[in-house]
Picture 1 (tube, rainbow, N blue to C red):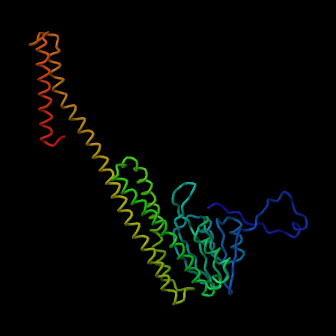
Picture 2: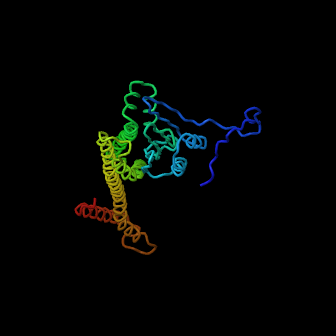
Picture 3: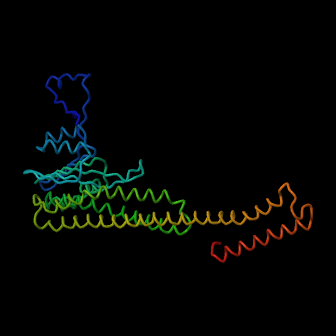
Length: 330
């Protein structure tokens, strides 16, 4: 991993006479709210300045800080004597790319603090943080129950955030199923592919989360006994999400197979009609070719002979159509 920038500590001479050639440093983008001796620090998309701030204010393990800045960690929970370190993934809709992506929330929990470091703006984190900052009653109520409960509320809100997205996917599946039988099979192939990709991405985000939730349920540090049932509820929510995704996976595969069958059936109908037309006109073409040869044939240069040939062709045509209809080919 490349060396990350470190904040330069100003010397006394620098304070008296700043050097215009010195690279400009920026204050860390860390917000804080506190109540009852418990504080919550939050920083979106942490970088070098936030790393320096963490190293200055906390005694976190260097590997955990590296994990925060890497933005590419699997969901997990690590226990230390003085704190817990959690990595939680939340599906977030990227409006620019127009697809689901994994939003990572790195959480440090200690006896009197919680630090959250999302790798991007994640709605459930922003919403809970802003509510606690704006509503004194809610902040006192949540913070009074300790850092373990505050962590529970954050993780629980993050998983509750998944259910509206799952409902939207479910509505998409219903619309796709209706469109198939309304004669729009060819038009919705791309929609089926996009929805299938959403489900696959959602599953990739949630699958590794299940093991982390099971570990969180067994964690005792900073989690009083009366909170164990709450973390069991989070685990149940994770399993419900996974069950819904499993069901969606089966549904989208069934819709895709049905759509392909309908498209193939319509294509077969087209080929069948073209084949019937070709077969019907084959003997007529043969008859016309025989009487059109540059050799003497019966009825040549005779009006009666022309009408006889036409009559033969009509009889053959009617006979073949009747035969095909009797066999169910038409």
